[in-house]
Length: 111
Image (cartoon, rainbow, N blue to C red):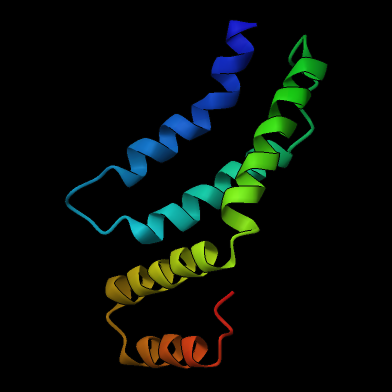
């Protein structure tokens, strides 16, 4: 049972380490990390695990909370997405991308 809990929580540990950086912007990485966590939790193809029914149950409980606090909260999701787009802009240093981001925000099309 402890191995299952460790398996389910491992993506959360990796996401926490990723967004705990101090030498790079982390808001955009949080958007990426949350989507990766949701994808992991939605994956029901864990039949290689002997207690896959328990694993599925644990994942479904966590998925409900991720959905509630990140995806059902429009303001939170929009903030993370804008941050992700701004990091993308900073990495590519493109004025065109910045203008596109600005237009998407103005039109409220970011999310």
